[in-house]
Length: 408
Ligand code: ADP
Ligand code: ASP
Ligand code: MG
Image (cartoon, rainbow, N blue to C red; front, side):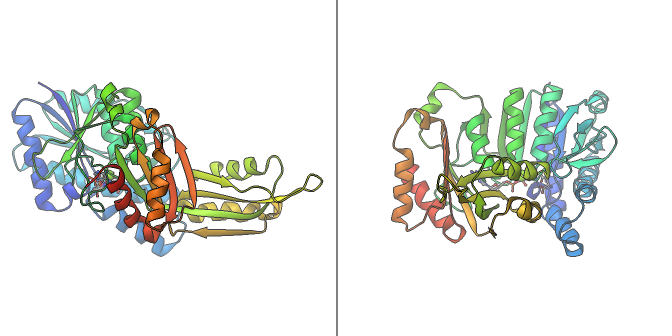
């Protein structure tokens, strides 16, 4: 008798028929004698709709109130899923994140899980219930409602699987696994049988939204092996697990395109010690996640403080907040101008095989050059190369890079 954690994303619970379909699948596992914990997202479009509602009222709404608002999306789905299971005569109880024992820090809209004590979940399972937990939400020790960042239901599922020491963790979504690229953009993308935590983590944090990156980080830390698969068919999915020796044979496991980044450039920043520290400390204090940073060579001379340009990328939803922070520093630091653009895409190639193969970056740059795509920023790590390019050319570039490294 296995203990299984299943997570169903927004499309998988997107309408009443889909919710009934989820209930049927859960009932089937239960009839085999398994104990099932189900984590659900808000129905597709609900979270975006709530964000739009708030922004129609105020462009920079209070993050505490956003969490109160957004947590309602998942709360609808848990009740509807329980109702669907009841109509199949399966005993089921829904729990909010807080009721399930998910305690977080107080960083609203991107809270981190502090601890998880699923006492209530265990009790309800013991009584023979299917337990349905609202994804994406938790509560601070003081009782404030929090959310875990976009796509955070994945994290709820992985964290519950770790805390309950589940035998199986399944992430059900609208594609039947992790592909070498987003199959909506690259028709030739291939489904992967397995992928390492590190590769999945890089792909996820570089735009492959099939998994929330923080959930993969958590899975790696607590060694939760999980499978990404479709809620619409029974095809085998992709297993995400610790790296094995043979994984290094593949140079590029996947290609991703992040369209959710914005670039900020500070023009004429005084080139002296402490300036960068001041800027990025202020952004950090405002909980703005900064990703790539590039600083130009200073145009100064030895006897005079020079000036330089400093560019960095942030998540698009954080752009307004970042601009507010930067505007507040203009007088103190004395830079000339601020330019912000949302028209960028971050294209990345990822693979643990890059550690042992050379010439990968050169081949990427050459492929982009042949497509007439200009490179704006570059960053690399042991297992990835990322470039910032013009958003308008993002998909074309992704298809060309996929063809060059993975094939048709
Ligand atoms: P859910 O609502 O189930 O959490 P998401 O929309 O968050 O689903 O993630 C699934 C989507 O991720 C797919 O529809 C697909 O377009 C996209 N995606 C991006 N990159 C990949 C990839 N490498 N492999 C599979 N899907 C990907
Ligand atoms: N509903 C939340 C979102 O859309 C969380 C999730 O779907 O995982 O981001
Ligand atoms: Mg998701």
